[in-house]
Length: 509
Image (tube, rainbow, N blue to C red):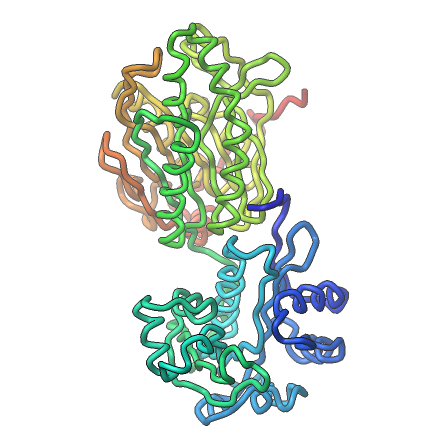
């Protein structure tokens, strides 16, 4: 990432965005002078199909866009060019009752490429296609590198070589990686596209949820995918080695479409090996110097891989006081800090740690969540306060040295899931660190726990990792099941509390 990014936003295009849209489009297509949408074109698109016009903003600046129409399948089936499909740029071909979403433009400003923002636009188009119950997404993609090979390859041969990764095309390679398949080659598609020799590739993505007899559907996302990292403690030579391992796991869980990645408590402890000659309290304060760079790298990974990351925990020095904290790095580029409220006797004795003083929940694009670090899960008051604020998923990064310590975390986490009618995800470290004092052994079995009722597993365990083995755990949780449980469960724990006799309240410090 070349520059600091504070916030990434994907939303529908507004006419007030036009000046920035034009500027980004001009810089995105330097080889095609004058190829940008005029303001009256954008006004027309927004008047006929506002939900189909998308923009990506970085810190309030428009850096990319995806524009589309809904057209009859018959228009797509026959040979056409860009002028035909757009009704000679009048968009008269748009038909809100048709069944194909046709992409007429997509671009990302050159300065913001490499952050997978284009993929985010494509994913938003797919969601729109599903929500509108359309049959497919179709568009004709340019093949800008074809001009370099046109003397020796036909368009068909060129496409085959790109498919086999023998050649790379910046547009076609990207589209193929986003699950689009080639329908046919279009000749004389876009006048003036000399790089592509005016050829284009008609591509399609099929909506597997398309229903020819559509019913009313809930457009809110219900099923959330969690990616838990059961982290192996290993010797690390430097901070970059840690980052490499972190990105590997983020890549893995995001590749499975996870909405969240959860790392364990104090997973960066191997870096303390360089300070093992110091006292334990001094060594962990040296480790705390890495916490801000770790937060920044996770923030970049959250944007690049389009995933919300819960960074486990790490030591954090603030005005000389040592805390155990972590960060929620959201895929929109923002981040928030959480702190361990209850520190263990060991953390006080060996490291001189202090507990945090703020109990809060976090708003995400997948609903409201809570985060507690290890020992905190053994105190039921915290999660009950979070449940009162609407928490649906509680994340618990932990680190336990022995099996009996793990048993406390596991059974308390299961209790929190039952009593608060929520999901609880726990992730821990495994292995050993013989060269790091007070961090020599670890035991963990990461898991996702559920409430206990007919809609959930009978033992309240949605999934468990293999004990003491480095791995990831990918788990889907359905928030609609929680809504049903709250109202119609066999027991209704949250509703049946006797608040006339007892209550729990936060103390505002």
